[in-house]
Image 1 (cartoon, one colour):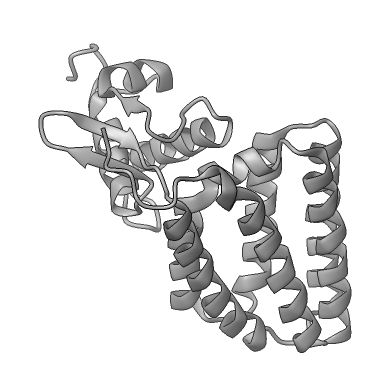
Image 2 (cartoon, one colour):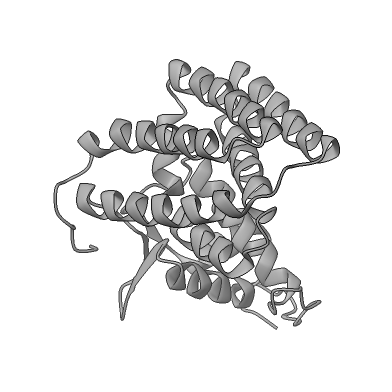
Length: 233
């Protein structure tokens, strides 16, 4: 039993090999990052997080370790966990990796069926609704869902998993980008253009659109970051 009086049970093991309680804790912490409840450089306390999430410290500890492994958090012995900060150069490198990997993946996406295209359109319509509200946290989740729905049609699961890893490292910064109304409108508009290119089977156009889509986000974020890495505090 944990110190909070909650029973520490292993829970159901998910397809990813983690207990469901750990998976839920990871997802909840991601939502806190997306909503800016947790900010770059902020310290995390396991006891407070366990109380906030309504779980024992065991799944929280494992969730923090998993997020550290993804580069989302930093850990220092005898200090604890902090939300990772990225420098402008680290952001540039992350987007270089995404550009290389996403181009490979897009070139492997086959001509999509009408059902697959309808799914992408429906997701983007939900993004448009979240953008209008605005609900930035929901928009971030749906934006992720849209992009990875496209990527997974490639069948390159290992490459898509690596894109996911890089994507998660920069997600907390994309939250800031989505607070700009013009940026939210642009995302919806560019998704529609990408769907059109995929409908036509125009791979070169899809790659071109994705590059412009990605670069606009990078260019918006980079000026607000320090030029070189900042050691975790």
